[in-house]
Length: 141
Image 1 (cartoon, helix red, strand yellow):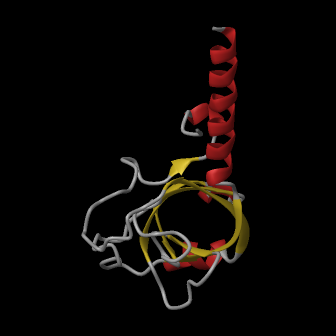
Image 2 (tube, rainbow, N blue to C red):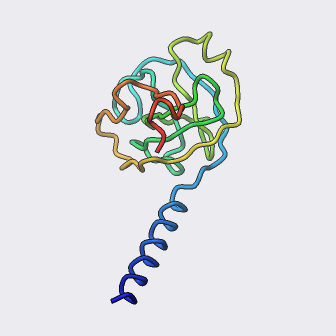
């Protein structure tokens, strides 16, 4: 009986370790944009979305961005762009002034949920848009 329990515990440990490695934090470059319109996912642009290379971060993915100051938080990947290639994200901002002020930052991105890469107009953004990345907010996994 104890051999079965030990085997089960070891198996659980391996699964948990593998899951922790499945979505490790990655280094990205973040910029910002403020263009209004329809995203590649088929939704309207709004706070809480980013544009990304769908080969790296599929459309519909939910990501945790850290290192972006006030703009650190949880975002939905709903857009793409011709200049958004590889490990780069473009955070949607409400104004051109805000986007220019943001500039270019080295950030850390962790995939919370991988999207389906479908351009179906399905809204995937967290209910309150971008969520702050503070442990006190209770939104860090």
